[in-house]
Amino acid sequence: MAYILDLDAFDQLTKEKNLKKDYLLESIQIALVKAYQKDIGVNVSNIEVTIDHSNGETKVIAKKKVVDDVLDPLTEIELQAALSISKRYELGDMVSVDVTPKTFGRIAAQTAKNVVVQRIREAERDKVFDEYTDKQNEMVVGVIQQRENGGITIKVNGVEATMPESEQISGEKYEFGKMMKLYVLDVKKTGKAARVVLSRSHPGLVKRLFEQEVPEIHDGIVEIKSISREAGSRTKIAVHSVDSNVDAIGACVGQKGGRVQVVSDELGGEKIDIIKWHQEITAYIAESLSPAKVISVSVIEQEKAAKVIVPDAQLSLAIGKEGQNARLAARLTGWKIDIKSQSQVNG
Image 1 (cartoon, one colour):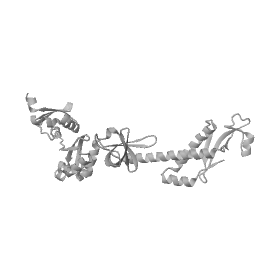
Image 2 (tube, one colour; image 1 turned 45 degrees about the vertical axis):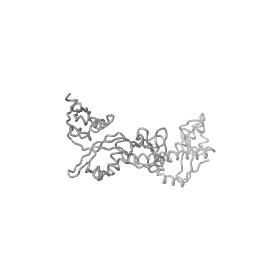
Image 3 (cartoon, one colour; image 1 turned 90 degrees about the vertical axis):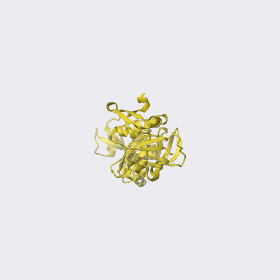
Image 4 (cartoon, one colour; image 1 turned 30 degrees about the vertical axis):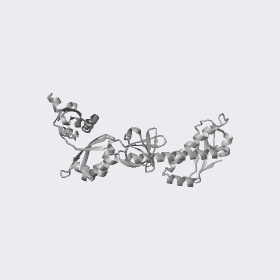
């Protein structure tokens, strides 16, 4: 007995879920062939499933060769039986025989349902993947859902994303229902879904926050040249103005420090040093060690290394607590920085 596929419901479903109808029907046909082979316990290759696109009638058809003596009833048909189908058949011809089993309705219904569910999942996965691939390296707003195995599940516009432990800010509280801004670090296709990976610790988040808060950055007047960050503690950001009439640092700091304070507050009070970028490397390295004052900078170009001399009273400030200021300056500039006090050099 043929199985009748509900084409009206099928059409509605494909439109609602934005699925390609032909692709879905083809997937169902392939799955039904496998289901039939499993049901009869033989993996025959001469089977196909047909779906009538006018009424949804679904049948299992076997291609059988016309022979005098049938040795394999799954692939062969006797001449007399073939002639009862059509008088035109001769020995050696291939005949299409309806072999739809009585139990096929149940098998087909469950198989079609499974295929539709799988294709819907794939379509939703692809939709999320495409959408968030475009948003990679951008900032989104998410709502904290739950913590699992150290990671955090976050809902972003109805999509469940994840923030691994390595992308969290140490000491930051991720409470259920809390809304926060996050950086889209990566988007991957997995077997069943698209995996959107978010970050609170990536330097890119600081950049996006400043772009949102500082119109001059958004408009391209002020450029962020480099960022180095130890999330939850301190960030250094080097900025440059393409307009000599615009103060890059002043634009980022804002009136009474309002703009930089908004960014700092979003990051849980993270300290943010804004410095002026210089094309000339010695000036840039000296600036990167701010707020410390620098006496001199000498560089070894081929090693991309610099020796910096600071006043004795500025040494601890230049190095920073546990070496943080020097570390961030080195990352910001991309140069190795060796800091000495004046008395250490003069010996």
